[in-house]
Amino acid sequence: MITVSIMLATIMQALDTTIANVALPHMQGSLQASQDQITWVLTSYIVASAIALPLTGWLCARYGRRMVFLVSVIGFTIASALCGLSTSLGAIVAARLLQGIFGAALVPLSQAVLLDINPPHKVGQAMAIWGAGIMVGPILGPMMGGWLTENFDWRWVFFINLPVGLFALYGIWRYLPENRPKSSPLDLFGFFALSLAIGLLQMFLDRGELLDWFDSWEIRLEAAGALVAFAFLAVHTWTVQGTSFVNRDLLKDRNFVTACVFGFIVGIVLYGTMALLPTFLQSLMNYPVVYTGMVTAPRGIGTMIAMIAVGRLVQRVDLRLIMTAGFGLTAIALWQMTHITLQMDSSVIVTSGFIQGLGIGFTFVPLSAAAFATLAPRLRNEGTPIFSLLRNIGGSVGISVVQALLTRGTAQAHAQLATFISPGNLGLADLPPSMSLDSGAGLALLNAEVTRQAALIAYVNDFWIMMAVTALAIPLLLLVRPPKRTQAAAGGDVPH
Image (tube, rainbow, N blue to C red; front, side):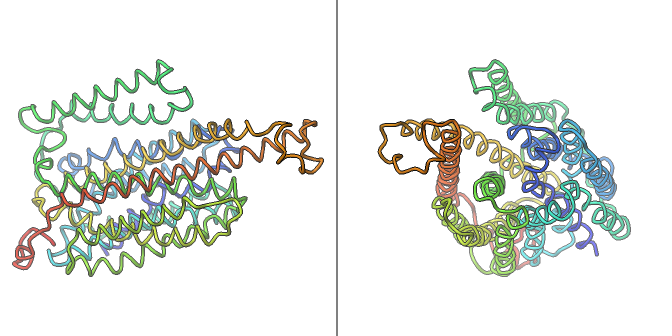
């Protein structure tokens, strides 16, 4: 019952990371926002969660794990209702910020609870259950969001959290025992430095394309402020006497640090892809919102199959081999996505989505196991938020970067293609009269088609970049140290 209760809360939080993706075009019209502005609905949630995540360990030590869980579920459920009731862009962004703040603790706390209530030889299966909850949310979110938007309204993508939150609240209140790790003072300087760095970095990424990057003083200041804040955090962490906000002992564990880097990359690829596909399918392929969710659903099937298999393989096969297979499958799926066209059928999206789902499933569970394989149990409450933090920051960076590259790539490709639209181009001589260069209506139709083709080129370039990032990350797996089986077999604290 503990597992069911905490996983309900975890799935609810993970689902809200992407469930609004397919509803964005509908929200954009309802809230009178531009395409750049409406993505704040996604990034505000991720950024707020990233800033609040590192506080989880201190809050648990101060108020107890059970109390933090209960308050988080209550706050998240109320914030979900406020999102559904929002009537302006500012209101929904503010409500999403609250969602991110209250939901931040749910994922790392669920991971810490599962690690504590399962013996070492069951850790692989426990991480498979936890990983399934984390990954099913973002992957099934677009399908559920599309169905709710089509049959009800985009507001129901948030209202759906209310019954789930109530069930999770009852289960946690009824079954979860109290756990209060040893308390340590809060490093306020470290917390504010990290929060400022993350906030400024996200503003830099979100507003850079809109303000033409470093031609704007605002962007220059945000970039400089983020760098200075990160520098202060690094120096403070290594030099402060006593407790630092980011525990230095975490940074001494090679497996944990490497797993965090990979978590960052997984966040970029997963969330970046999920932010691109719905807009591509709806705006360029003219897929209805429900069908958009359906063709992206095989990604979830692939992930579930991989999760079932990897929960057993993690006990018998080298974690690095499993993760290599996962990253390889993800790279193959992204390579398939680089071959999309405006004349293709949905089989390309279905096939590549299924393969990417397999890849993510084969990556995420062993990645979680590797992160904590050599980490002392006393560091779990502080380690799980940092691990989730890096994945969230990766997701936020991924969404912002692919959107900026898409906007800029579309403009550049449009300018290049437009040079071929001239009376001297004999290829245009056979166009129907409705698209004649001599009429304003004809030029408008030609411009619309050029824009579609330019957007396609930009989407393909984004997928090429993410494929390259995934492939280049594979050699880093050599840095992961395989845990000793003898320790786990002896019933020690180190899972394998």
